[in-house]
Each structure stands twice: as C-alpha cells, then as structure tokens.
Amino acid sequence: MEAEPFIRGCAFTGTSSVPYPRADPADTRIPRDTWATAEIPVGVRLELSGDAEAVDVVYRTATDNLGYRGDGAGRTFTLWRGGKLVDEEKAGTGDSRVRLALGGWPREERAIVYLPEGMKPTIRSLGGVGGRIEPAPADQPRWIAYGDSVAEGWTASGPAYAWPAIAGREHELDVVNMGYAGAARGEVASAEQIAALEADVISITHGTNCWTRTPHSVDMMLASIAAFIDVVRQGHPDTPIVVVSPVIRPDAETTPNRFGATLQDLRHAMEAEAEHRDVVVISGADLIGPEHLSDGIHPNDDGHRILADVIGKEVAAVVPR
Image (cartoon, rainbow, N blue to C red; front, side):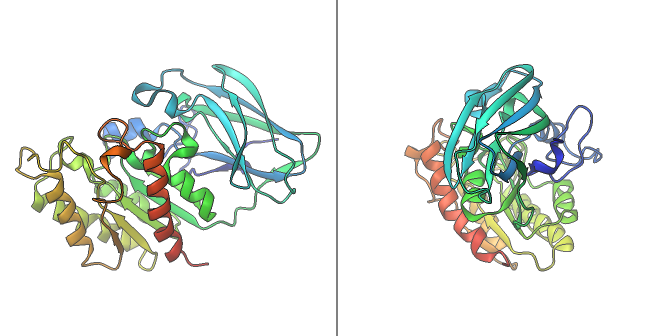
C-alpha cells in the first residue's frame, strides 16, 4: 500500500533527495543552517487505523550518523496507540522492513508510528498483517510549531518524547514541527512560509539562538518578533497564535552577548513586544528549572513533559473545535 496517505506532519512538497522537508525547498532565502535541519523529518509520522494485528513498514534510511542528538534522534520505529507505547523495533540502514504490533485496540483507534527521524528515512509502503489497515482520518486541527532546538526535540530520549509530539498526541492535533536546531531566529522567510500554510493554531517558541548563535540586541529582538508576528498574521488574520519566550539557559541568563543583551533581556523584549499583539504569551523563564536540562541548554524527558503539559494545554485551549 502506498505510504503517502499515511504520512502526517509534513506540510511541504518533497524532493527526490528530501522526501519530507520541514521548510519550503523552493525558497532560496532560507539560511543554510535552517535548511540543513529542515532536511531531517522531525515530527513526521505515520497515522493509521484498522483491525490488523500488525503493520509492515518498508523503508530506506539515508544515514546512521545522528550527530549531537545521538540516539535521541531516533534509531527505532515506535508505535503508539491509545496514548501508550505498543511496540518498538530497531531501524536498519539502507533498504529494510519493520513489523510493528498494533496492540489489539478497536479498529477506529488511531495508531501513530514515529520514525527514526535522524536516520532520514523514506517510507516506501505499508501493509496490514492479519487484517486491514487504512490511513487515519485527516480530521485533526493542524498545529504549526515554529521554534528552535527545544521544539525540534533536543535532547529527549526519542522523537515521541519531544514536547510537540507529546502535546500533539495528547490533544489530538496534527502537529507540523518547524523547530530548527541552532537556526531559528525569527527570519521573515520562515514567517512567510508559515503565513502560506494552512493552520488552525500556530506556536512561536524561538529566542535562544538570538543570544549568541546570531546575536541580537534588545532593539533587534523587539523589531524581529514584531515583524515575525505581523508577517504570520498577514496569512492568518484570525488564527490563534501562542508565543513562548525562551526557556531557562543558565549560562546565558545574565551573560551579555556582543550587543550587551542577556537572554533575560531578550526574553523580556520578546514578551513585551508580543503583548502588544493579539496572541497568547507564555514566559519561558520558569517553565522548567536547571534540573530539567540534560546539557545545560536542552530539556531532558522530564523537561519536555512539563513543556508539553503547559504549552500543549494553552495551544489546545485556543484551537477552534
């Protein structure tokens, strides 16, 4: 059975080399670092239902080099159903096949298969074992989740444990993960891409990379977040938007960057500017603590769970149903 009807979380048309891009491949204005992480199919998944005992997934992986995220970028296929992890199988390199048990749930219960995204898989086909499978209904509200490495899922123990994945699963949202590790700085090109996409709710959760990766002054941050929201609003005048300022980063909180701005300064600027617009604003300062960071920058599984609980609740609350 062709895989395309089962694919969720991919809002852009793929290419022969990047089947599930998370930014528009035709947009040559996207910075090189943004495109590099957009090639990884973070949050892309399979969603199916049916009375089969298991599903066979035929696939090809492009790499075994998972970079900084290591195994957290995904070395397995995991199948979730009814909010529970039902089965998990190791992914092979190159062309391969995996069989995942569907757990005996009622046929209408949605099953979600998370991919070994860091291995850049291409799904070739799916088949039911001992019964039928079909694509799950494409009736969930679409959530565009723009952000940085925290939104991308660094350093959760696997793709299913990134906070947008958890929140999407629990609140029955079709999440499109536009989290760009080391790259999301509120570029207008990304805002224009979001403005052109269909969306029922949008979250904006960047800011950390505006401290040192591409340093911003306070004035730059004020202008950047204003422009980003305004451009998104041009395509989504009535769509709910949730803006979350950066979570805690101990080494950056009171340390000035080359423009004299600390992360606290940039966080306050982001919140202050967003408050002037018709958006929900959440301060990231106290959402998690240092004990929830695995490397001093990125949340561990407990941190991602907290973010999913808090941000997911706010996102779900404003979605038209």
